[in-house]
Image (cartoon, rainbow, N blue to C red; front, side, top):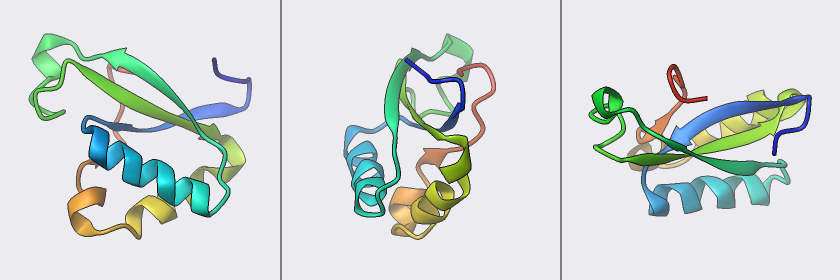
Length: 89
Protein backbone atom coordinates (compact mmCIF):
# COMPACT_ATOMS: atom_id res chain seq x y z
CA UNK A 1 0.00 0.00 0.00
CA UNK A 2 1.31 3.41 -0.94
CA UNK A 3 1.82 6.17 1.56
CA UNK A 4 0.62 9.64 0.67
CA UNK A 5 4.07 10.81 -0.48
CA UNK A 6 5.04 7.70 -2.43
CA UNK A 7 5.16 7.63 -6.22
CA UNK A 8 5.26 4.93 -8.86
CA UNK A 9 8.81 5.11 -10.17
CA UNK A 10 9.05 2.45 -12.87
CA UNK A 11 7.81 -0.91 -14.11
CA UNK A 12 9.79 -4.12 -14.58
CA UNK A 13 8.52 -7.16 -16.48
CA UNK A 14 11.36 -9.61 -15.76
CA UNK A 15 12.05 -11.12 -12.31
CA UNK A 16 15.85 -11.10 -12.77
CA UNK A 17 15.85 -7.44 -13.79
CA UNK A 18 13.56 -6.61 -10.85
CA UNK A 19 16.00 -8.29 -8.49
CA UNK A 20 18.91 -6.22 -9.83
CA UNK A 21 16.91 -2.99 -9.53
CA UNK A 22 15.90 -3.82 -5.96
CA UNK A 23 19.49 -4.69 -5.00
CA UNK A 24 20.72 -1.36 -6.38
CA UNK A 25 18.13 0.46 -4.29
CA UNK A 26 18.98 -1.53 -1.17
CA UNK A 27 22.69 -0.76 -1.56
CA UNK A 28 21.95 2.98 -1.58
CA UNK A 29 19.34 2.66 1.18
CA UNK A 30 16.54 3.98 -0.98
CA UNK A 31 13.16 2.91 0.40
CA UNK A 32 10.95 1.03 -2.02
CA UNK A 33 7.90 -1.17 -2.27
CA UNK A 34 6.51 -3.26 -5.08
CA UNK A 35 3.04 -3.42 -6.54
CA UNK A 36 1.91 -5.88 -9.17
CA UNK A 37 -0.34 -4.66 -11.97
CA UNK A 38 -2.00 -6.53 -14.79
CA UNK A 39 -0.98 -5.29 -18.23
CA UNK A 40 -3.86 -4.59 -20.63
CA UNK A 41 -3.71 -6.86 -23.67
CA UNK A 42 -2.92 -4.06 -26.13
CA UNK A 43 0.02 -2.79 -24.02
CA UNK A 44 1.77 -6.13 -23.54
CA UNK A 45 4.12 -5.67 -26.48
CA UNK A 46 5.72 -2.72 -24.68
CA UNK A 47 6.35 -4.89 -21.59
CA UNK A 48 7.90 -7.88 -23.37
CA UNK A 49 4.55 -9.64 -23.61
CA UNK A 50 4.16 -9.82 -19.82
CA UNK A 51 0.68 -10.22 -18.36
CA UNK A 52 1.80 -8.57 -15.12
CA UNK A 53 4.54 -6.10 -14.24
CA UNK A 54 6.13 -5.06 -10.99
CA UNK A 55 5.71 -1.36 -10.25
CA UNK A 56 8.53 -0.03 -8.08
CA UNK A 57 7.24 2.56 -5.62
CA UNK A 58 9.47 4.95 -3.66
CA UNK A 59 9.26 8.15 -1.63
CA UNK A 60 8.90 11.19 -3.86
CA UNK A 61 12.00 12.88 -2.38
CA UNK A 62 14.17 9.90 -3.32
CA UNK A 63 12.84 9.38 -6.85
CA UNK A 64 15.71 11.22 -8.58
CA UNK A 65 18.34 9.25 -6.68
CA UNK A 66 16.53 6.00 -7.47
CA UNK A 67 16.38 6.86 -11.19
CA UNK A 68 20.11 7.66 -11.13
CA UNK A 69 20.87 4.27 -9.55
CA UNK A 70 18.81 2.46 -12.17
CA UNK A 71 20.49 4.41 -14.97
CA UNK A 72 23.89 3.46 -13.55
CA UNK A 73 23.12 -0.25 -13.89
CA UNK A 74 24.36 -2.25 -16.86
CA UNK A 75 22.71 -1.20 -20.15
CA UNK A 76 21.04 -4.61 -20.53
CA UNK A 77 19.31 -4.04 -17.18
CA UNK A 78 18.48 -0.33 -17.40
CA UNK A 79 17.08 -0.69 -20.92
CA UNK A 80 14.43 -3.11 -19.60
CA UNK A 81 13.13 -0.76 -16.90
CA UNK A 82 10.12 1.26 -18.02
CA UNK A 83 9.55 4.74 -16.63
CA UNK A 84 6.49 5.53 -18.77
CA UNK A 85 3.65 4.03 -16.74
CA UNK A 86 0.65 5.29 -18.71
CA UNK A 87 -2.22 2.89 -18.38
CA UNK A 88 -0.69 0.96 -15.43
CA UNK A 89 -0.16 2.98 -12.28
